Length: 177
Image (tube, rainbow, N blue to C red; front, side, top):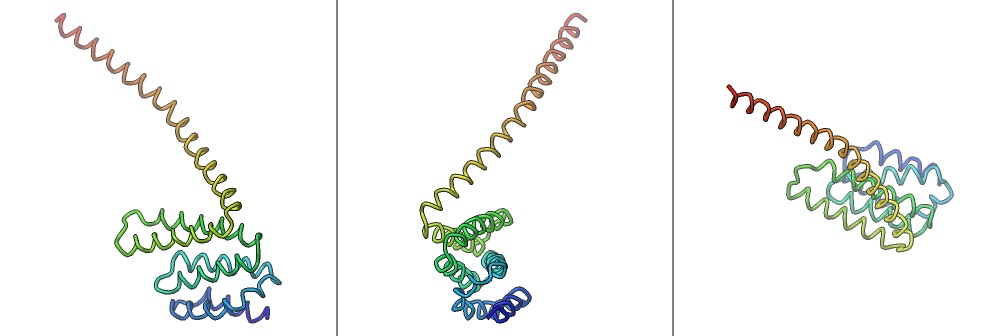
């Protein structure tokens, strides 16, 4: 079974035809329960599925997500935690890459967001813990940005005040002349 799963993973990661990848993922999905016996292979599958989910077109993202969802349900909390972290990061990366959003890209991002919501709804308690961590990280980033900006603002204000005072001095000198 290990050889079958390893060869299927190799085909998923090395093939370029998206329809063929979607077909392979769909067929291997029935064997998802056997990945529990091979933790290193499970991690590689999760990584490959996140890649095909976030970057794929057509049926590939849906099939990849369904495989990930089945893994989370069948394997349990260890896989669920990994998948929750991974799906959030893959979603963020995909949103960052799309600065100018076309209609199809907007639909793809909306689909990815729905998938994130679906996966997080599997275990609300775990989802709460992950959301708390991500919101805390966001707060740390924002605080860092504000404290970096704070000294710059003080410096900028001092420069503006000094330029205002120098302008006043120039005006006073021109008035005297």
